[in-house]
Length: 273
Image 1 (cartoon, rainbow, N blue to C red):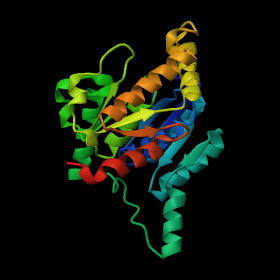
Image 2: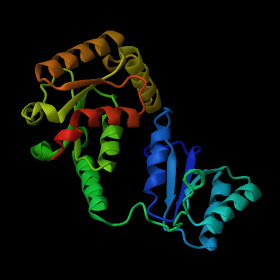
Image 3: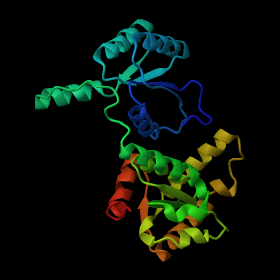
Image 4: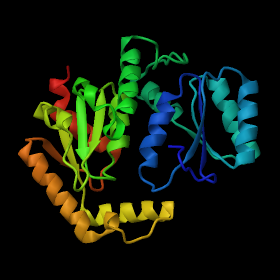
C-alpha cells in the first residue's frame, strides 16, 4: 500500500497485538479509493509513553490514527490525546467489543494479542502470504502448482490485492497476467481447472483505471494499453481463454476485495488441500 504513496495520505496503525487486524481493515477500506496511502504500523503497544510518542508524530504528520487496543486505559489515552492534539482517531475494536458484551451479557478478557496467538493457523497464514508474494504477477511459475488458488486476468483486474487478501485468509494464492500477443504460460494451463479463477471487469471501468494509472506514471494517455477497442478485445480474448480452460469466471466490477474474495472461496473452499 505504501508504494508511490501520496505523502499527504498518512495513516498510523496502533495495536497491542500484531497490527494485522488494523492492516486488514485499512486495506479493505483503501480499495475504495484510487490512491496509495502511506501506512505506519506500531504493534505491541503496552505503555502510555509509547502512545504519547506516536500521537505526537501523528499530529506532526497530520495523519489519521486507526487503533485496535483492547486495554481500556490505553484506549482512553489515545482518545484524550486525539482530542488534545486535533488528531482524528478511529477505534476499530472498542465499539464492537462493547456491543458484543452488552448484547450477550458477556465479560471481555481485555487481553492483548488473543486474536493472533502463534498457533498453527498463524503460521499457515504467514506461509500463504510468503507464497503470494513469491508468485505475484506470474513469478516462480515452476512452483505455481503448489497453490491452493490461482487468479488469472488482464492487467489492472485487482489480481495482486485479491491474492494478498486470500493469503491473509490462509490460502496459498498465485496470480498470472493474461498479456495480449503472448501465450499464457504452460504452467498455468496445466493446472486443475478448479484451482483457477479468471477475473474480468467492465471495459469502461477498466479503461478508466488504466488511464488513471498512466496519468499517475506520467505516461502518454492514449497508448493501446488504455484504448477502448484494445481493452474490449483483451477482455474478449481473456473470456474465450477462461471458457476454453473451464475456469470459473468472476466479474469484479464495483466489488470490494473482500466481496470478490468471498465469491472466490465459494468456488474453492470445499476443494482446499
